[in-house]
Image (cartoon, rainbow, N blue to C red; front, top):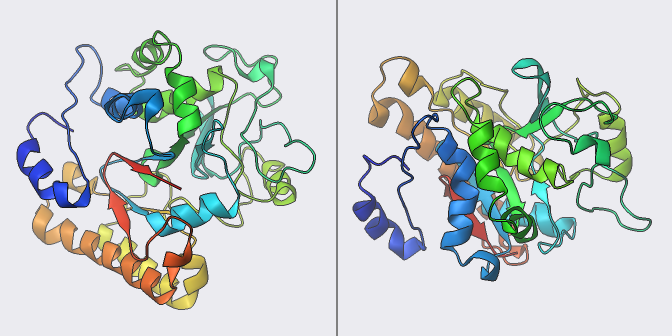
Length: 322
């Protein structure tokens, strides 16, 4: 969080909900987005490091809202093992050159090796040629850099976090080298750490469907998404419009609506032109959260293992036991 926020009050208000807030200082010579790139490691250390008692870490922007029951259904329905190195998002953007020829949204990481025989879902293991530093993809079958879209959110397993933190000299220098004024996206560093260690984005679709979608790379024919499925990359619509679209979807297809694990509320309008936060943004934000809670109640979503009906989360990072 920014240093000018009142963390004492936030921690007091969040304590009944097991919420904690902390300040990430600016790092000279780096854009503020470096905080986004470093949040997983800050949180990992704060929650006990390798001895943490959670299974999954949910990372998003300050305008990301999570549906925790939907997250648990996604993870448990695929039998994902949190001790294995998983990185979850099906709202990715793929670039073949730095800041050029980028495509989004992309749902399936085409670089992943097939799962072992008899295993439906597994960590995305990359060919060795896809794990070189920088843009050295000469030996990679897909010459691209895959990054998560921060607003739609990203989920790390505790297994992936332990891998990223295993060498204390690995991730911090990588983030500092990656997030610089001329390349300010903090999202890139989040996926680069996993890539250099040999991992990409775990497939969330059945193998045959994932293969069909990936075959269309870079512009995939996406049939369904779970992370921020209602929005586009850098979607400029007002939060009121997002709420309207989500309300229509919930009425039209409630079962599909409840597969959505995250919502990107898009508060960027506040920084691009004058708006009153309380009047123009927060009502729609609250409406989206209430819609998620109501839809979970109607769907009896509390049956997900480890989940409770009607729970949502918002903020930079959260932990989840699955």
